[in-house]
Image (cartoon, rainbow, N blue to C red; front, side):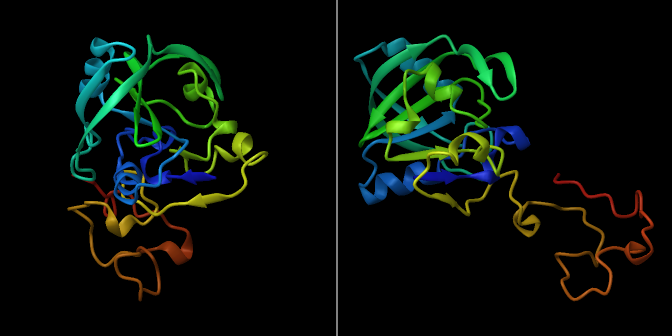
Length: 211
């Protein structure tokens, strides 16, 4: 089962620190054979320092985007430590996500790294010694590009509706300086922005900022 979390997609500009699914699986107690990756530099360095076989208590999630995610405290066993340097499969190029470790808790294997990892393919899991094809649940932080790899063998793919900086529902993003009226904040408009019907671009007057 592939759960796709597009709102926190690193390939779309997200930071990969979303933990909503982690929190929900911990609450449900139904996380056996689940793989996910979360960027959290403090937790990653603590896990690497503890070493393989060590037990570590960390707060995980919201390291970069606390406006969207609340850190959750957990105690986990370190099952792997990596340098974080590996070769992406899509696109093919070398990357380095910094100190990386695998934390095992409640049946989940969590790849925790100092920097976020693109998740268009399986390479971040392969680097960590994990095999998504034998897992029961895999969380992929991607809005669609992941399908080229995962769709071939997934029993099912569910796109989960979580918050995040890459949320496709623009009304949930913390914009503060939107000229109104503008669609989709004002859904009853004849035009989504001034001049849209004629193809004119309202440069400057309709610029938005998530400040």
